[in-house]
Image (cartoon, rainbow, N blue to C red):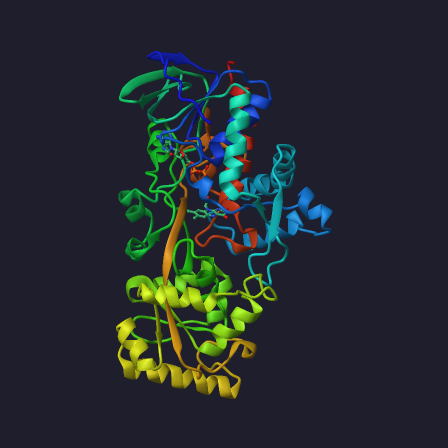
Amino acid sequence: MFSTDKNRTETLTAGLVIIGGGGAGLSAALTAAEKGCKDIVVLEKRDRPGGTSALAGGLFACGSPVQERRGINADGDYLFKRAMEWAHWTQVDPKILRAFINKSGDTIRWLEDKGLEFDLVQLYPEQTAPVQHNPKGHGARLIQVLAGQCRDMGVKLLLNTGVKKILRGEEGNIAGVLATGDGEEMEIKTGAVIIATGGFCGNHELLRKYFPPSYEGMTLSGLPLTGDGIRLAAEAGAAIEDFATVVKEGPRYDLYTWPLMALEREPATIWVNKKGERFTDESTGYHVFESVNAILRQPEQVCYTLLDTRIRDFCEKNGFMLGRRGSGVPGLQKVLQAEAEKDKVKIAGSWEEIAGWIGADPGVLKDTIAEYNDYCKQGYDGAFTKEPEYLLPLESPPYHAIKGMAVLLDTIGGIRINQRMEVLDNQNEPVPGLYAAGVVTSGWESEVYCSELSASAFGFAVNSGRIAGENALAALTC
Ligand SMILES: Cc1cc2nc3c(=O)[nH]c(=O)nc-3n(C[C@H](O)[C@H](O)[C@H](O)COP(=O)(O)OP(=O)(O)OC[C@H]3O[C@@H](n4cnc5c(N)ncnc54)[C@H](O)[C@@H]3O)c2cc1C
């Protein structure tokens, strides 16, 4: 679908150069092309466009045509206040967040106009409104559509081409970029650059700089991108924030195994650590961006979801609470059995055997289960106050244990920007001609990913890309 321009000369000229062909970069390119810029080059380091965006499920929006057609009031003002409270008004620049929220509904209209159709997803039962818009075909399809339309509009997409340096002129203006593609160096002269290089999950130096050592134990679910944009921006005069966010979730059984991923978040299950101790209210499993924090505090950052046959059969018949009660999960027992044969799940007639598989002291696990079953009989969870409706004693063998991990999806930060996606220097002045979009930027997410605005990583990528594309036009020479 995409062509690499094999006839590159060593020096090119472009009106606008975009570094990174993921969700943010392609949205920026298409927006600028639609506004009339004819000379846009997107430089993408990998052999395909999409980046982590191609793995995403959906994107945040409020006030979208999808919500309006269904009579859903997803009030942007209310969501803005909730998100700022969530952030305690630290780390998040309210003007950036506002720009994102305000743009988001129109972005869904923009994408629908391109032929995409959306499902609305409520992330957890008490979420204010469903705000996650999952395109049919998910992020991969959205990328395919954006990249195809970029191509139709004449945007030049150079694959296997990594940017090494952003060049500045004598007056501090942006003058071009240096890139390497197929082993050849090239210089592209331009007056405007948008950095959209994604996160730094594959850069251990940056991971160590920004996050505590416990994050080293997380399992990478995304791409090992190296955060090049942070270095490129810093060398070009940008301020880099000391703070970044890990987009993480858990427990997660396997990266893409739907039924067990949902089963391990069933609120009637219990979660124990490697020592066989319970450590949290398991009904927080719907808050995957928060429940993962409890797992990260446990030895080896793992968690074991325990259930009995009664819970398993209930889910097989009635479905999971994670948005699917009522539909049933035929074959759940077979899936568990198949995973048990691979030793990824343990099914056993006694808690001693389960303890042996986990590596826990059998006495500790037995005490944990006995205490929990007592709580169930009293209808009161004396340890973590789990709601009584979820307190079902684990008494029907065979018992099941599913190993859950804390997974790393992406990082957010740390180029300093303003609400126009202009890159700022240490005096908070825009670096002329330099813009950034997507998760390489800071100022719109605090320490824990805000679940009220679910799907805001991909959402911010597309929306900030559009905003950057519009504002970069001011600096364009095309
Ligand atoms: C499994 C999974 C599921 C997810 N689901 C969701 C979801 O449902 N909702 C949500 O909001 N978020 C989700 N996320 C996170 C989200 O997908 C990303 O955080 C977001 O899409 C990042 O967009 P981006 O455009 O900033 O970066 P990316 O899409 O990662 O694009 C960055 C691009 O820049 C390129 N690049 C990097 N350095 C250079 C360089 N020097 N020169 C040229 N090119 C370069 C990269 O190769 C890459 O293609 C998920 C993540 C994962 C892993």
